[in-house]
Image (tube, rainbow, N blue to C red; front, side, top):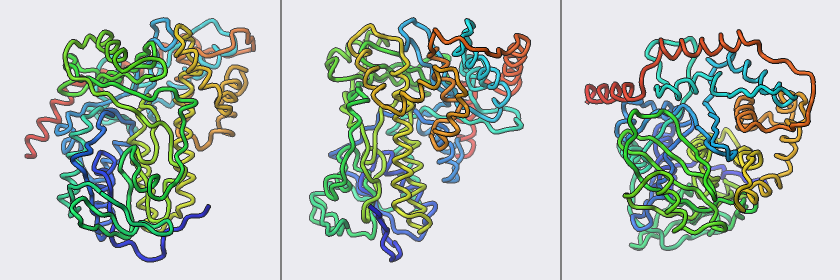
Length: 501
């Protein structure tokens, strides 16, 4: 179905929901659509989910698009730097691998890993690890910040850890300072006609009318799903994790610059280092354990004898169309995939930029719906690949998770080609040209999990030892000469912010 934006110029827009997604949208539009009247309706009685505390490098680009420096927002949000994610014990052998953020600085050294990963899947007995050949991984190992103290010839991509509540508050202040109207109330009813929202009636009786609406109402999806009845496509048959429990712990010293995703009996737990505390959480399947058992397992594994637990139920899937009539859904109202690769804010930021193009009549709704569907499905496939390639079979959960993941035919085809020993790069270029995950990410996951057919015996090339050593020495030299400890870099930010104030 082809959905068009009305031909009239959009002069007013209302965002329903004031979580991170809603305020990201308000901030971006305040910056890039200065003539647009923007209103945010935020209900204090509903509250924010506010658990997600990690990002991909897309948040760096988003903040740059607002014209702000890291010193402007990071100290206020207890934010720290993120070089990538350690995946611990996903094969049940207490081993781990690192999924780094790939940068142009890795262009030559990463090729050494690609050669060795291909050799391994073709029959080599030599097991190599991705963390040896990516600058971000070396920085993570040395607990350094991915912020060069001396100029590099190419930019380094990195993400952040942050307090989600404080980030939403910071974005709200940014938005209000630029003229965004803020209404603290709850919507009691929605007036609509022919796939168009006419007005939102607040509990006070006030009506809010706009030309266009953004649904950032979270899992409730009040406008896009409950009012306009756009179907929700559940992923529950393949992504089994539908619940989470989160507990704040003490700060880690020295401060890591990486996230940890650690396998658990019925899911996995995160460990996210912020400036003043550590975020701990357990993402699990409610079909395989109870909230009480999950909380007990998290407290034991992370050694958390104090701290209040926050329990969440997750609606895993996506809305069939993000744009319908005069509504654009973002955040949890649009889609949710478990936070294994910390992609939520990436999808939100990308959606907001597409919304901006829609409002500027540079892009039609049909194209936006297709792009966002492809993005979410691409993330879903990559997340499922972690379960499909895991060698764990020590509990019903891991057995069921593997079966569910492999039921995605496209993923099964990808893994089959990897195991065949064939030209995986050519296959990716042909079949995953528009995937959100590029070649390095697939190699880090599949090679890091040592996914292969052990009976495959094909001719292979392996990187000479002196080339391996040269690559590792080059990255070590870079980290020694250009980077400093994570804690030191954050202290520098604090001083810069204080000096500016």
